[in-house]
Length: 184
Image (cartoon, rainbow, N blue to C red; front, side, top):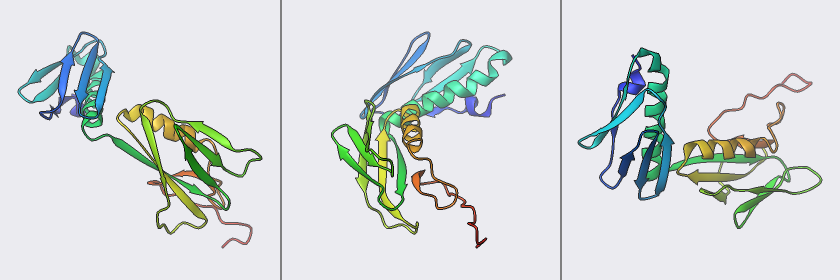
């Protein structure tokens, strides 16, 4: 049995859920999200909770997946998701211009990164104990998948190097640096 699939999803009072054959539509104070429902999995509303049920054991893997996607949709329209990205390196910087971020990451040209629809960014300098730390970019949105993909695309603009850690890094992940030639 899927442990994740058996859990019920608590639906807040200000969230409306509509269920069709192939999709689950969740509407809340922050917006509206549609999540696909895989074949063999059904959803039903019981009082103020949403329950995922599967037709047989051959749909066990999709049972937990469908429930997790529905939970992410409910969480997204009520509270939203955030991801912090740190820019580390001497001379590295980021500047917000409308719906795009202009990066200076040590290349010969600036990089213009367009934010997708539904993702917003905030750039600020936070006190951190990272050598050569410059700024933190806080990405926020209601769609967890789109937010994660945007953060990954931003990370790939300048992947942190293994020796000094210079680049665009995830703020919540620790980066283990290799020792240099001296073997510090």
